[in-house]
Amino acid sequence: MKKTCLLVFFALLIIPAFTLDAVVVSVLGKAEVQTSKGWQPMMTGAKLTAGTLVSTGFKSQAVLSIGKSTVTVQPLSRLTIEQLTERADSDVSKIYLDAGSIKADIKAAENKRVGFTVKSPVATASVRGTSGTIDSFGTLESTSGVWMVAPASENDGTVVQGVAVAKGSIITVGSDGRVTPPQQANAQAATGANPVSVSPSVAEASASVTASPAAAAQSAAGTAGDARVRVPITVGWED
Image (cartoon, rainbow, N blue to C red; front, side, top):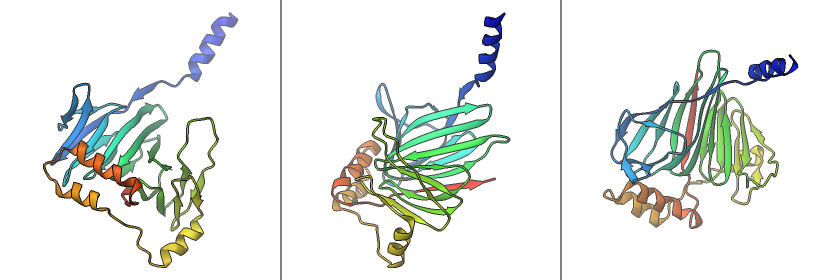
């Protein structure tokens, strides 16, 4: 009897997890996905699973539908879909942005929490009903709600302290993991300094229309050591 009661108890604790559908809504120009056969053209209507690598070329983009949310992969971008999970009480999606930029319109499902996380080489930003702009080098500006931003984890068990970024604030996470407080970042922004810089190699990658999307995105990503190229990720929320 005790064993039966325990089994029923643990069964009630388990919330079934399903895979969210990530569907290709549209493709403009050259967009590819990596399969066991190498890089293949992305096709409208195709379903993408967790672990899929996506790459876009010059003047190209791909629009993905994840649940009720929409993610637009901008030109010269490369990302990995890390997680697509649907539960009875929440939808969770995670993207690792290696190069380029994305736009995301995050919409809540009825009676569900929606968690959307974007990781870059230097920072992680999480959003639940907020909006803002984040680049792959760790600069985030909150335009509504509160973001939680933390340096990229080394997966060595170290606890990384997140920083809350309120509406109207800007925060920067450096490549060394150092976090510039929102107040300092706001002061820097007030000086009118332009954080955008593009190295010659990025310009050359942009000029080559015939290059494959994966190669073009790789070229753009490879300039990280030469110049800090601000590549925005815009995340919007609608009720």
